[in-house]
Amino acid sequence: MRAAVLGAVGEPLSIEEVTGGNPGPGEVLVRVTASGVCHSDLSVCNGTLPLQLPAILGHEGTGVVEWAGREVTRVRPGDRVIGSFLPACGRCRQCLADRSHLCEEAGRLLGRACGTRADGTALYPMTGLGTFAETMVCEELSVVPVGTDLPDEVLALIGCGVTTGVGAALNTAAVRPGSTVAVVGCGGVGQAVIQGAKIAGASRIIAVDPVAYKRETALRLGATDALDPSDSGTGTVEGVRELTDGVGVDYAFEVIGNVATIREAFSMTASGGSCIVVGVPSAALDVAVPAAELIFGEKRLLGCLYGSAQVRRDFPRLVRMVERGQLDVGAMVSRRITLDEVNGAFDAMAAGTVIRSVIVNA
Ligand code: APR
Ligand code: ZN
Ligand code: ZN
Image 1 (cartoon, protein in one colour):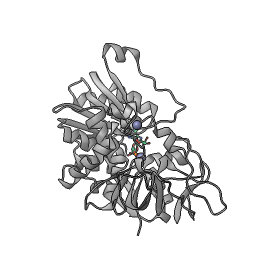
Image 2 (cartoon, protein in one colour):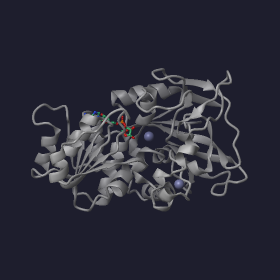
Image 3 (cartoon, protein in one colour):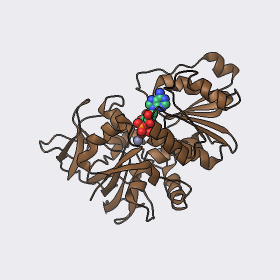
Image 4 (cartoon, protein in one colour):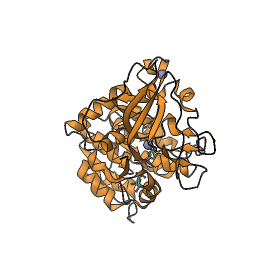
């Protein structure tokens, strides 16, 4: 089968013929039908997110189960599934406490090699998935069945960006009706935060992004105001304060992965409000916030992993929301591409010309 392999940090992905892994008794073989290209894939390529290499990248995908091992109980051949980039065992302390995104078994399940390059070198599928490929072999715990007729490219985005963004608003922050929200960074994940905040009933949603196309899309998807941080003058924090009677927002989401903008998001948060960090900066960096704002403003600084999603509950729920027109995932699909065009998708992401490129396998 063909797959997009990262051989070393800083290199382009190599689209090559590889040998897929042999599924074990608790594993499934999935024919991948579509895969979104997410910023976290780019972060692996440039070294921001460290990963065992060579790796088959891709962690936001969907497909059809072709074969299931004899211990597999939750899916059957023929099922449409969405990959979960964090497997959830359903039995550990975290899973039992509605925190399956922090599953204690995930680390053990994620690190394994699966498949080989033509020269026999072992390949590591990103997050136990490796969706930039024609097929993937993964743990049963890494896929969630969804009964639906929605298009593949829509289901793919539920695998990461949609779940992370909508979940950040609905689960991590639990945005309240009538509240005010700012979203700093309106790429694939940020657009999903905006939609989540709208679903939660926020009265004001301020989209912040330097790219005009991202701001325009945000306004279409539910933002009430848009700010360009590169505008000279008062700056983003002041701009958000001006739009909120000088108090700041109840919830500020950082969806870029940059410590300077995390600091800004914290400062635009109103006293008693929450700053939710969705973007993933390099693990080597510290996040610093002013102690006075933290304590005297009693601000909350919340990390957000995978939108605090319980994938077995949330994937089917998000599918229903798309089916009923409450969530517009189609509007986030800017381009359908082939596996061979994946490097161009990173260029488009860096140039700001797409919300999401989605690889659709023929
Ligand atoms: N202020 C506001 N927005 C900015 C700024 C800034 N200073 N700098 C960049 N941006 C915008 C970009 O224009 C882009 O629209 O941030 C957005 C980032 O979007 P994508 O590149 O599409 O990234 P996405 O896939 O949404 O992921 C965002 O979340 O899951 C994590 O690892 C992921 O850290 C990444 C973040
Ligand atoms: Zn992602
Ligand atoms: Zn668990």
